[in-house]
Image (cartoon, rainbow, N blue to C red; front, side, top):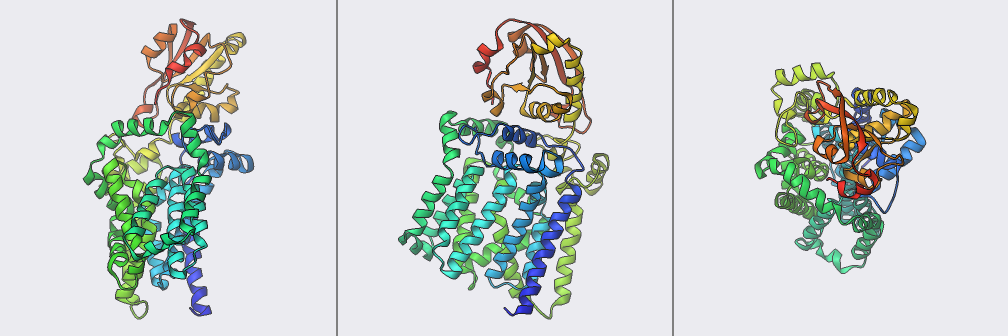
Amino acid sequence: MGKRALQSSLLIVVIFVVIKLSIHFITNTNYGFHRDELLYLAVSERLSLFRNEFPPLIAIIGYLHQLLLGDSLFATRLLPALSGGAIVLCASLTVRELGGGRFAQVLTGMAILIAPVYLRAGTLFQPVIFEQFLWTLACYIFVLIIQRDSHRLWYLLGVIIGLGLLNRFTILIFGAGLFFGLLLTSQRRQLNRKEPWIAGMIALVVGVPSITGQIINGWPLFTHVDHISATQFAHVGIWDFLLGQIVILHPITVPIWIAGLYYFMFHSTGIRFRLIALCYCAVLLLFLSIGGKAYYLAPMYPVIIAGGAVFIESVIGERKHAIKHTAILMIMLLGGLYLLPIGVPLLNPETLERYIRAAGLEEANKTNRGDYGRIPQDFADMFGWEQQVEEVARIYYDLTPDERSRSVIIAGNYGRAGAIDLFGKQYNLPKAVSYVSSYHAWGSGEASAEIAIAVGVHVPLLEELYADIDQKALLYHEFAVAGEQNVPVYLCRRPKVDLHSVWHDLKRP
């Protein structure tokens, strides 16, 4: 590649990365914090490498960004946006490594840019976006290993997979798919060398905190999987999962990633990377067999899209087909704009609700429990939290100073607890306690708990703990998720038992 062509290629990459970042920087603060973000910020404040119920990378990242940048909404969502840009960068570099030209790079950048799954992930401070980046980076490194016959890169791959293990345990499924691809292709010769095996050991060493946390906490991963299998996976059948791939990646991009699978499986220049297609198939089959949501497969697609773009460019040509190129890109651009409001918080909720109805996108409002909200669930989960804390603060300061010193705030889920911890700082509220998720492990607080303000706690549970239960408020936000509509707040007195002594038995998934 000549100097001018290289500069042009790099310029394309920079443009798409800047566009990706701009989309998120403009929209990321339009709504509030998501319930999962509230949990991860709470975990970050109580950073523990070896005692978390889930892998600690998200807490490490949260701790560092709170230390350096604070806990504002923009600061919290800065690294997810940057990770989204890094996915575009890695995919574009993969195109270059596969021999693709400028059109293939533009096509790859556009396909990733308009996919709702990458827009949504790049908006939220969750492990999802870091998983997508780490898988994409791992695939790029593996392309380099094959293309350049650079065996030392195996060590870097081991570090990346280890970081993936610190992020989400689904990296084990990716590793299994990669191993499957190695065994069934000529690349199995790689296994005759020491580097892949050392890379595996490196991954395990880096991932030790995740494994240790599971051992210490009695393998909560399996409890979590059982819980979401019963409450969420039950609503995702095989066809839902497969059709979901079309929706999350945008229907317009389907020919690109289908072409990518063909390119890696059968094309003369792509067949040397066949293990990537086989890895994709193995990961797909594993998720179909054990259960999962459609977006679980999303980390595999950037490299598949890159291969598809290279193949499409080889079919229609890189040059002298400006009209075809422009037509394809314009169709993708218009399609991307059509779905953009369900990918990022671009519109206010009232306008978004009307847009979804007018555009026929009601399926985007389907929740993980199979029912339908007014706006997409991830967006609905960003509303109502501050209002809840305002009401809790009002009730708390209606108590006398002596009563406040003897009171605890009990939250019925980690979203409510995380909101009290984050927004309660401005009201000087005590940290919330909760019997769910990681909150249970943090205990029942330091106060005597003779008085409790209970937010969204079921009355039968409260009746086991207190004799006097008085409902003080009913919290409502029209665009919040169904579970946060009509949330009761109780003031509880006259304890029947010592909350601290029975805390261990209150744990819920």
